[in-house]
Length: 93
Image 1 (cartoon, rainbow, N blue to C red):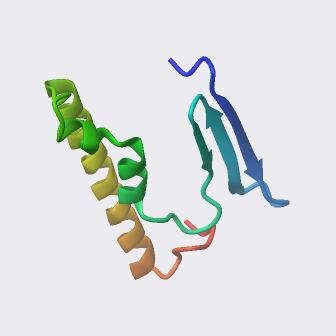
Image 2: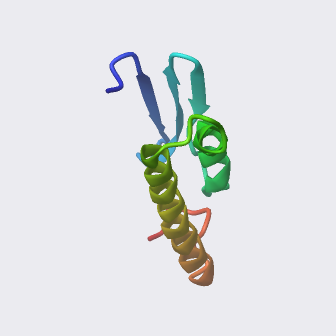
Image 3: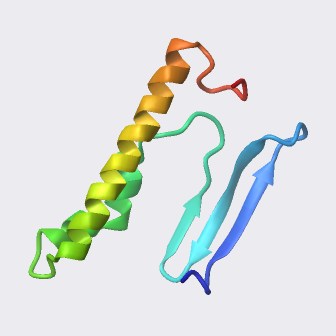
């Protein structure tokens, strides 16, 4: 599926995730380094909603969007839980 992909994860001196990058045909993403950003930006970058609002709309795009939105909701919940525990932006569990 991702045969042309190039993943490079980076760790800090303590062995914690510290960003990295992903390269593939037509796309380059710099990995998370610190607190997670806006997941909705990632979904928009995938442009599935653009295609779903066009003549290329289909059941598969609808399902992909639904699952991406569900994933975004779970990541948002995780962030809010971490903020409530005052550990967001740290490597504390």
